[in-house]
Picture 1 (cartoon, helix red, strand yellow):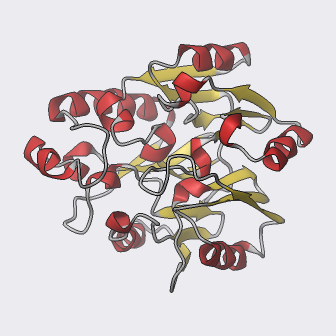
Picture 2 (cartoon, rainbow, N blue to C red):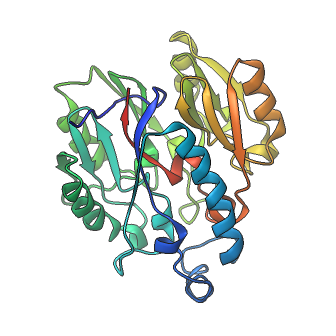
Length: 291
C-alpha cells in the first residue's frame, strides 16, 4: 500500500531513479546531445556507468525498493535527474511541467510509469504553470517551501498550493536570485538540503535573508557550504534516513561538517553523472515513500 511522504529526511523505503542506460543511452548519443542540454562538458559513457554503479549500490544498501524509469524517445539526457518531473505528497504524486523546455516530455512518461506501479496521482500542472521538483522542499510534514525562479513560476505555485491545501499548513515562497541566468539550473534545492528534521546543508550567499532566518527560528542547524564546494554540488545532499546522507565526492569541508554534526556520510564520484549535468544525489533520485 502506498505510503507517500512529505519528508525529505525520514528513512527512504521506495525511490525512483533512471539509469544512464535509459537516459544517456550510448556514447554516440551523449556526443550528439550534451551541448544541446547545456552540460558543462561531454560525459564519458564508461565512466558514467562506473559512477552510477557506485551511486546505486549505496542506495540499495539503505532503500528497500528501487524502481527504474524506462527509456523513451520523449526524454533526453536530463531525465537521469529523476527528481524533477514529479513531487510526491502523502496523497500521491503531483505531475509537474519543467521550466526547461527540453525536459517537458518527461512528465507524461513519468505519469504512465506511476500508473503502472500503482503510485497514485494527486494532480497535474495545467496551462502556463511551470515547475521542477527541485524547487519544492518539505521543511517538515506540513510545511512546503517553493522556489520562485526560472524553473518554477507563480502559476505553478498557485496550482500546487491548491492541490496540497487540505494536508499542508504552510506554503513558503522563496524568491530565487538571477545568479548565472536562465540557462543555468538554480533550484531551491541547489541552496538547501534537509539532512534531519533539525539539520540542513545550505549555501547562504544565494539564500534570501528571511528564509535563512526562518530556518534558524525553527531550530534548524545550518551547515554552511564553502564557495568552491558549492560549485562542486556540495550543497546537494541526499538524506537516506535522519542524519544518514549521500554527497558527491570532492567536498571535504562539507563532509567533515556533516560528520561533526553527527551524520553518517557516503560519497560517490560524480564527475560524469552529477557535475557535468549539474545534478547531485537529490536530483538523481525521486523518493516515493519514507517511513
